[in-house]
Image 1 (tube, rainbow, N blue to C red):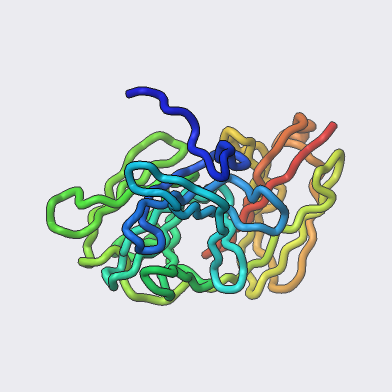
Image 2 (image 1 turned 120 degrees about the vertical axis):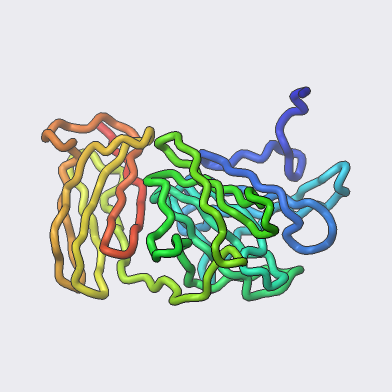
Length: 275
């Protein structure tokens, strides 16, 4: 192969915040290949992190201008370290959005719009095995759908930080079984101050009483601290964390991932330590 350089939009190299994940698909059903790009964090505060660049040129010579951000309901869709792919997973003739992400699971956002103008609701399904167990790569799920076994339906290839590649054969005839959609039961964490020099407050709220665990990971995926791991009642909560590791040692300056997990949901947020 020959290195043909960076893909550009409006005459400038496309460059996202970090951990870019490109996927090529005809997003708006005009017969031309478009570019969907996921990124680790939004490029601006309170923004989503899936970009769509529509092809203004041709298939042999794609050309891109400004991008749009994908919405879920009324809000821009944001999931930490998002890895988006687009397939008609429920075989209804509309391309759906399927997301790998840092928590290792796979989220399914059904297209409730049209072929030419995809739209997604604010709720999602988590892809599961036949026995109801969420498909989980432990962390950093990256996914691809293909007819692996030649039976004319889409099977799932999934990998993660641990390095394995797993095949999940489609047992439903479509890629998603109709079922109860996930309802968010946790809000947060909101971390302040951020950046933090000595002590940070983690604010979160629970719709129901549940077991809650907060883990802190380095950018290379290592678990460095678990400041909370206990059953907590519903309501508003605040946790103070002194920016130390599991042995009480001060963590070096840098960017970390805070993951809050309940019995059925995981949220993530980045935290920056300065010294």
